[in-house]
Length: 259
Image 1 (spheres, rainbow, N blue to C red):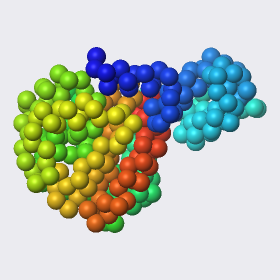
Image 2: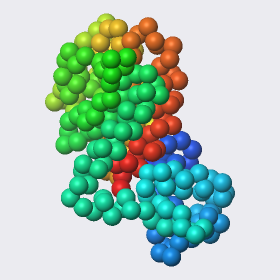
Image 3: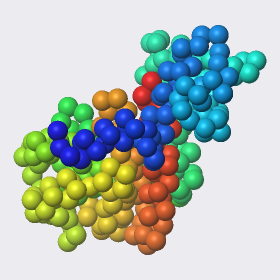
């Protein structure tokens, strides 16, 4: 296991800062509530989780909005969403929730938003929230073949191990798309291996001239995914703040697809 992979696992295990820590704490909260079928007050849950009551309350209220928890007579119990997840409409439910969250984020950013996965050795853009005022980037070259140049692709590749990256680049050779595209395989591998898990990946006109992008990891279970946004290069001054907002919103998105 690479040092980077060990670092990501440590973040999840410790429930540290950032979207990974938020996800970890939320999942532990759900497990704690499940141990109390008759309901548990916040103070009991906070003690079991070794967290401050206000922090547990904030998590519980977010999960209540999403239907995963319900507060009944001062005690928290699991919500009805879990029953739906076991039915045949689970895939449709998750997709609807995902589309809704992406649309909310698009409106908040004023820019197109994407959810992508790396599955069976290939990059797939599974959902896009775009609008006339927030156009999606034009796929002028297949995204699957250009992971080396896009923020989405680099973010997904950075979550693979060394052999996984090598295998992908062997099947999809690096090609120059713009004057800014990294075409040296060793340089690209070095950057991917040194990419911190909590730092957004940027694409500054590497895939397409006139477009800048940012992507952050979305890790839930075995999912290798990312949340990304794109905007015209004229708005590059907004990219860093947009990337930070993506990172903040990653945890609720992980919850939407993790259970």
